[in-house]
Image 1 (tube, helix red, strand yellow):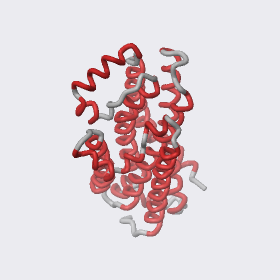
Image 2 (tube, helix red, strand yellow):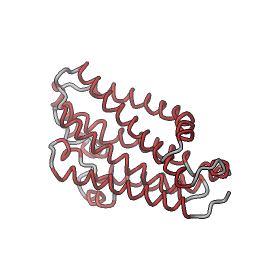
Image 3 (tube, helix red, strand yellow):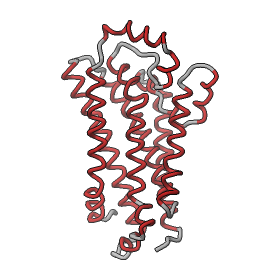
Image 4 (cartoon, one colour):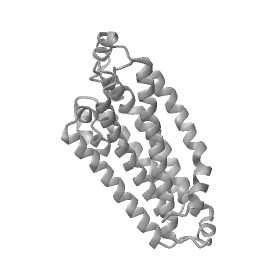
Length: 266
């Protein structure tokens, strides 16, 4: 069970943060979809040939002339990883370690709310925020695509791609929440919670460049989000996506158990 009062309070306290990121993503998604033009395919190919390293660095190499392929490279290769990652880091810190650091956790626990109930409520707040964020991006992408390019969006491939993206976001949320549950200071939690995801993102960007840096993909879990395989509905893409979800679930469980059992500076 969750504490409904605390759940509503957390949503009221954090919805503005969500709205800020939704506004930013609305701008990027709508602008990038409007840039799609199959007739520019040759121009993009020439641009990639001229600066292959730069295009690969941001996950924009190997563009296809389908709308979903275009979105996979321009949106899902970087923007829809980086911005939600920052949001989930901030939200995770606000849900647990912020209260511990400020000494407010004693107030929450003194209201006849058990640690188990409190942390379940915070997990529920986190997961529902992921659903709202990803659900909004999916619906916005569909709406903009159908408005600007009717019938051009391969819906099964698009939904498959977003399923993988949700699993990646779930992993990020689970990891950041686990760190938030284990730390007593916001500063340390921010360093550990943001440091590893940012490192993973940098390694992913470097591994996109063909050549000596390609082996770096084996050092980042972000490589488990395989857009091309998800678009093509290959089993490998789904297996890795489920793997990301499972890792996120394990991180949430570890964070929950850690919070329930450790000594808190109340």
